[in-house]
Image (cartoon, rainbow, N blue to C red; front, side, top):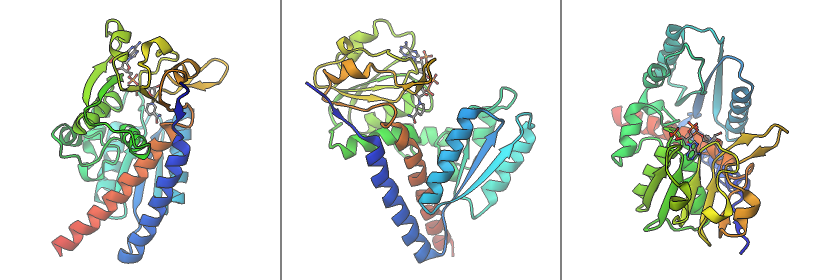
Length: 290
Ligand code: NAP
């Protein structure tokens, strides 16, 4: 068996074109242009690249982006004040703080200062609780992107055995919740899981987000499984790889995402979707109030 490669770039391009159209129609109807504020603290090169990609994607989709670059020694209070100002700014519908933050910054406090209605990353505790209880406000962008990839490929989730490798707050846990909400039977594995293969071999859909190159090899994958590789790892030679042995697993799986070009392009795309959604809700709430 040779797996069908799920082309995240192509699917992202389709959704981004839909976003541009949706933004244009929304602005024509309401005079409001969706706006995203991006806060970058310090000079981490990878973070700078991520922010640049987000800003470019916003521009292409007709979304206004406001980038706030802060010194790496910025005080917590200054950052909190900026977020408070952005919470009150009617031209800003989404606020994103690029992670990771320098160690002296109280990340939990920062994320909880963002108004839940503008928390387009979905990291605020209120939004995490909303996701858990099935009252989602914003789906976190990376797992949301995975769900959209599965939808676009016509891969059913209901009743499927899903294994998520990785249990972080930004990928693994929300991924498991989102697939459980779509009636999959979900197991989550983490670094202390004993005999990882015992779990992965039973997965109809295997989502891997551990940050460990080569973690998943062909014998760990059920024949015909759908394999989604969220991992992004830079090897010493500069090559970017996922967590899955792509060549080996491609011979067992029915579908597989490449790295790069799989989940990666979907993450920024879902940020655009969440920002437009937020602007539409803002307008609807204004109309109801008036
Ligand atoms: P993270 O916060 O470091 O979490 C990694 C998770 O994987 C943890 O739950 C950890 O377990 C688990 N893990 C580590 N080694 C493992 C092993 N040998 N076996 C099983 N589980 C293991 O990372 P993250 O932010 O979730 O990101 C994960 C990967 O996805 C990274 O490569 C990251 O670059 C990538 N990523 C990609 C995108 C995208 O857009 N494609 C977005 C976000 C992240 P413990 O909980 O026990 O420590």
